[in-house]
Image 1 (cartoon, protein in one colour):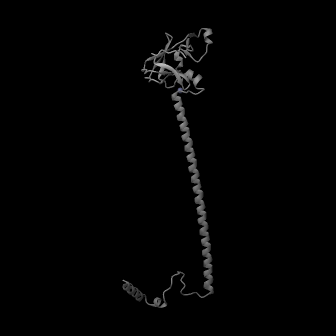
Image 2: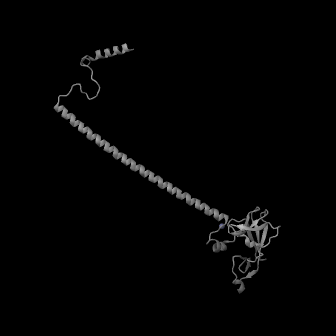
Image 3: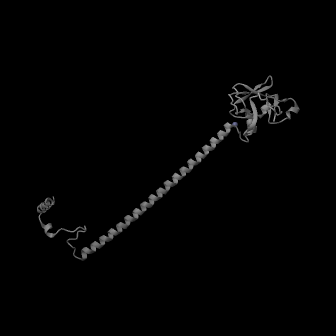
Length: 238
Ligand SMILES: [Zn+2]
């Protein structure tokens, strides 16, 4: 790994995607962090046009920096879709510096947006691993899980409702059967009673209430006397 002077505010370290550049000191917003440099490639030069690697930094239509050289520490800076730094390109001087666009705290990884072309060609096919995209993916996964659970609960509720309906239907048919049985029993009783009326002489005391009947004398006394007698009985008791 290339040597980095201790007065620099960064170091090379392990990141999610391999190596990355991390702040070792607080870097204030707007500060120039490091220069992105390497041999200049001219698009008009046939030999230069054949060079291809991940560290090519296009300045304009004609000039491109080949940043794959060992001394170019800035090549360790990873891409992020919501970065804390940016690449500041001076097309006329053909110079690129990485500048903080937020205040970066010690320990934080430094990153900048590599641009749409790089994203489309290199990152989109494999899925961008920056914090922003990882969070977005995690959120999507959580939402998918929640939706799945919602559908499951809905299906369970529907099944429970259906079971209840079937149960009620069964209840109804049971009630119907009981009613029918009662009706049959009643009609049978009627037949028996009708048979008794026509056959044997009916018992005058039989009223079908199950209660004992009063004596003949009590029943034959006028109603006023009966009430008086009852009242007298109540008064004695009191
Ligand atoms: Zn991303």
